[in-house]
Amino acid sequence: MPSTIPARDGRLYVLELDLSSFPNQNGRILTCKTDGSDLKELVTGMKHLPDGIAIDSEKGHIYWTNMGAATSNPWDGSIQRCDLDGKNITTIVPTGILHTPKQLTIARPKDGAPALYWCDREGMRVMRCGLDGSNIETLIQTGTVPENRGDQTRWCVGIAVDTESGVMYWTQKGSSKGNVGRVFRAPLAMQKGESPDARTDVELLFDKLPEPIDLHIDVATKVLYWTDRGDPPHGNTVNCAKVENVESAQGLKYMEKRILTRKLHEGIGLALDEENGRMFFTDLLGGIYSANMDGSDKKVLHADVGDCTGIAYST
Image (cartoon, rainbow, N blue to C red; front, side, top):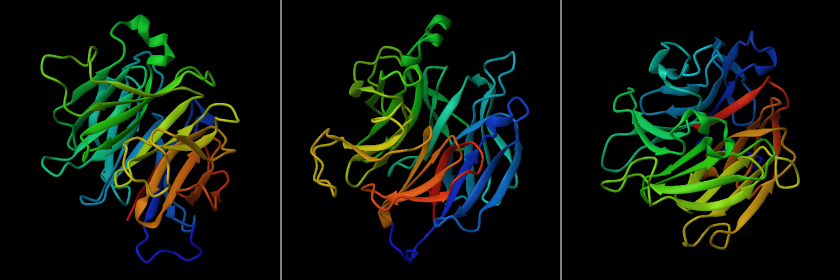
């Protein structure tokens, strides 16, 4: 990371789910500057295990997913929203629809309304809706019967959307440290006559990964970034690969995977600042980190702020 703060800098927004205190958890939304300073709480007392976070800077909103409180009703996941100061918490997708929603992103097509995209892990789905929670759709369904839910290779976790190319990417993490994780791609628009559980346009990009979690796509360079929670040497890493055959700023060959940084402690959240060539990432042991997008100049912004999941960057 450059030694000076960029002329146009933003803030980081981090979810801390307080898993160490389960079942009496009190999760939080934290925010800090990109050098780690000015750390403060925006939302506290979150009981439903927040996981994915996205910022709508145009409207001044923070969106996040809640995995659920592990109650007798497994369909207790939800999506909520608040203002950038943590006030005016609103439920966008109520309980009863989602099982375990994970990473969340906002996609803004040139033509059309912006939308929320997310993965529902044990729900075995990739989904989207309007920013107000309207028009909930299932785009990918990897299992259709309850018996499928125990098969972790069907669990959808990370999501990234490239509206310029009209595609979405997602991870299916597989079992913990299992080396059966995969990354897929499919068009945003489903072919006529097909269904989410039987699409013929799904591409498998990478397989036999330790345990891939969150994703982020640099739309300009077509380089896909992801965290991996699996065992070393390939797990607990941040990785990248060029997923379209265009010239890349990093000189990557098409579909060449590269490990950018290692030694995370259950790596999960990931956010990019493409304008300033930086990335930010978290791990479940409470670390918040920064590095250049090529993996150099890794810094520990905070070593332990709790149990971290999602992270977002916004100017």
